[in-house]
Length: 222
Image (cartoon, rainbow, N blue to C red; front, top):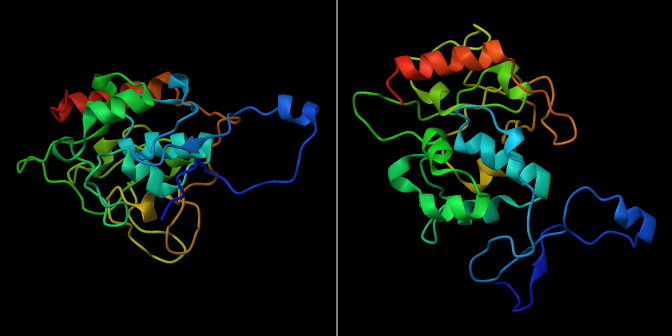
């Protein structure tokens, strides 16, 4: 149960000097009690995003930059979404306008981040990723299509299990997945060689972007 006063997202830290506070890169956030959305602003630089980035990848960057808890991210998907049960990352299940207004992203980018529930395009129920892509902080909804078995950018097989413990994460937008960006929710091992950070951006090359776009078009997702 939340108190009526706004509560800080992150735990309290020791007092800082004025000089230290002026060097902070990101705003301190609070959550509005009823809507559970950022009340004092947030950071999401559109330059951090790559073409056809999945909603999981976008929300992971949003969480990492703003130190938001997983349940707050799940609440952004719709007022009736149970944060712990979660919801499938599909167009039919997400309140697109709610996401658009919060993340300040074009509807086109959000549509590309989600997949329509179509029987002729079966999608994996487990989270699938390219190891080299995820080291750059990138995951595409394209990787969830079962017929796509190789990362278009790096020509390596897509992976589904954690290399350390073998856990296969369900592809559901729930607290467990959103709370553990770029790593296994079971054992905490990283999916890639490193974790994405807003102060250490490694964008995809033009060649990689073109390769992903080409497969996206070939699969009829545009």
